[in-house]
Image 1 (tube, protein in one colour):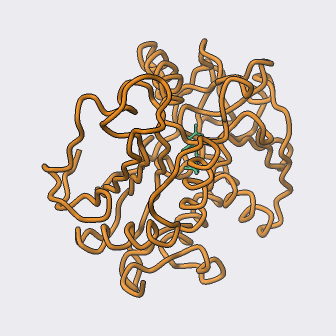
Image 2 (tube, protein in one colour):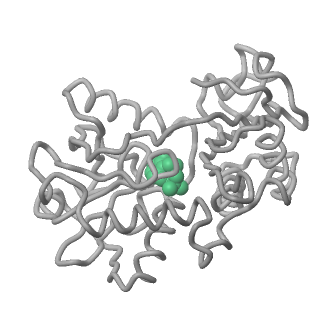
Image 3 (tube, rainbow, N blue to C red):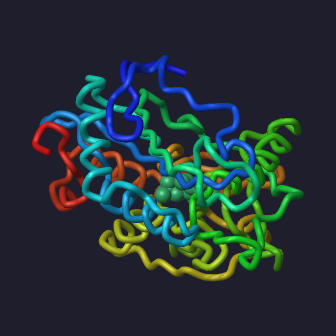
Amino acid sequence: MKETKYIWMDGKLVPWKDAKVHVLCHSLHYGLGVFEGIRFYETDKGPAVFRLKDHIKRLFDGAKKTFMEVPFSEEEISQAVIETIAKNEIKEGYVRPIFFYGYGKMGLDPHGAPVNISIAVWPWDPFLGEDAIKVKTSSFIRLHPKSTRAECKISGHYVNSIFASCEAKAEGYREALLLDYNDNIAEGPGENIFIVRGGKLLTPKLGNILEGITRKSIIEIAKDEGIEVEETTLKQEDIYGAEESFFTGTAAEVSPIASLDKKPIGKEVPGPITKKLKETFLDIVHDRNKKYEKWLTYVNNS
Ligand SMILES: Cc1ncc(COP(=O)(O)O)c(C=O)c1O
């Protein structure tokens, strides 16, 4: 990974190489941490963070739902994100804030261990590349909603995502797609999914998936473009028969899907609706579309 200069830890910036934790850090052993993935983009007014408020809100909602007492406010963490970007002097990249239980207590009950916070930023290209990708339905299903808080970005959840991704890669695919416990389409390991059928945009409804901020943005953009959108139940067959399909996510942005389980989707290249939505999304994040400027927080003015 590309290193930057500073990482924010528990209230102050420390040099990248000094941002360390103890091996008996509680979250390292038991996986209870909540985190975010946020992007900031180069604009004419300097770096701008995309939907910072929504990401910070999801982070704090996750902390609340996991009974984590965070020693900073939403406003303070938002400011810390801005400060970390500004001090690292990079124009565009990814932000990773994480709340985790640190050193001082072992055993499953985390209470008594300190809640530590770090915020790192680094340059990171779109995670799935630019081309339409080959996807495999995973043999691993998404976590059951009654087993956990599926809607939170909890560190331990990502073991399920890692298994699915590794399996797909071992079989020559670029990414996995996970079903839920009812064999409905859920999401990618770190992405939401959309399909286009009959010119209409369809995506799995909420309940057993992460409420992606890119997903929410794409739904709003599509509706504004006059595209009909439906949040519904989807099966594998719906994707096999789709005209277009794409993943959305902060790391992946808008990533076209060429095939699922070797069954081609459309012409296996980005279709017109995918291209249009991706183009509009990239215009928005780079502040080339003033209608959505409300989604940007400028680093230099904050
Ligand atoms: C499991 C999962 N689904 C979907 C997403 C996409 O969410 P967002 O668009 O907020 O990054 C992510 C990424 O955070 C994720 O980890």
